[in-house]
Length: 300
Ligand SMILES: NC(=O)C1=CN([C@@H]2O[C@H](COP(=O)(O)OP(=O)(O)OC[C@H]3O[C@@H](n4cnc5c(N)ncnc54)[C@H](OP(=O)(O)O)[C@@H]3O)[C@@H](O)[C@H]2O)C=CC1
Ligand SMILES: Nc1nc(=O)c2c([nH]1)NC[C@@H]1CN(c3ccc(C(=O)N[C@@H](CCC(=O)O)C(=O)O)cc3)C=[N+]21
Image 1 (cartoon, helix red, strand yellow):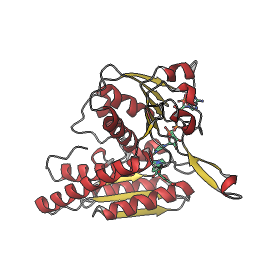
Image 2 (cartoon, protein in one colour):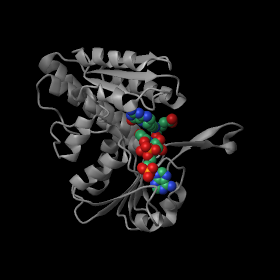
Image 3 (tube, protein in one colour):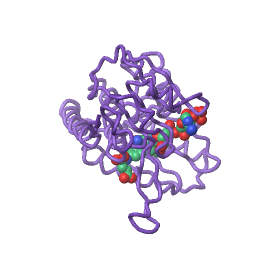
Image 4 (cartoon, helix red, strand yellow):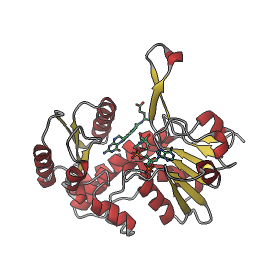
């Protein structure tokens, strides 16, 4: 079998088209323009790229977009003071604190300062709790699992009854919320992690295999059940001497070429889940703006 390639770039473009329409509708109904504030502390190279992409995408959606770049030495008190100012600013509907934070800054305390209604990364305890408790009409979902789930639904439909899903990774940002979304769609879900015994055998049981580990090409082709849908969340930069000295390329957590021989459908890296993450951030911002205006929010 040769797998179908799941085109995350195209799916992301269609989400962004809907976001633009919904933003225009909101502006007509209430004069509100969605506002997104991104906070970047320090100089993390990868984060710089994501932040620039997010800002460009927000502007193309017609949002007000602000990026706060703070030096790595910023104190926790100053960072939290900025977040509190943004919490109180009626022109801002979404606040995204780029992670990881440098040095002594405590991500848990910083994230906790964000008002849950503006938490477009879905990382506050309140939004994690809403997802865990099926309070889905009020939740803001983490963008990456929400985007990955859209790709699953596009491939298999909305109801995953009778399907087994394996999520490799249990982070707060990706693995755990992904498992909860698959469960909400009626899949039978297993969450694997670094302490799992015989990971290859666990993966082979999956009709839907989600890799969110952060280890380049760890999941081999023969770990993939024939016909499975493979969602590769991993973004790993590896040396690419074939492109020239010192060059790098992005690979996922799945050995893509090998997995192509087994999977029914698979997301590439780049061009899979990554673009969906940014599209879902725009979707969350427009959802937060509708709710702030007291209007029923669109669903994606
Ligand atoms: N496409 C996108 O938009 C995004 C991509 N990413 C990428 O997704 C990947 C995962 O990110 P994130 O969840 O934040 O990462 P974390 O490092 O927070 O979590 C990694 C998870 O993988 C598990 N793990 C590590 N090594 C192994 C192993 N050998 N076998 C099985 N499980 C293992 C860990 O297990 P344990 O809990 O036991 O330590 C942990 O649960 C990264 O490559 C990241 O760059 C992240 C966010 C967005
Ligand atoms: N608070 C927080 N929220 C995040 O969502 C978050 C974060 N911190 N820290 C880092 C990770 C990583 N992440 C990516 C987003 C987009 C692409 C993306 O657009 N990728 C493109 C290509 C990127 C490229 O070429 O460099 C693709 O896969 O096709 C990748 C990775 C969000 N993260």
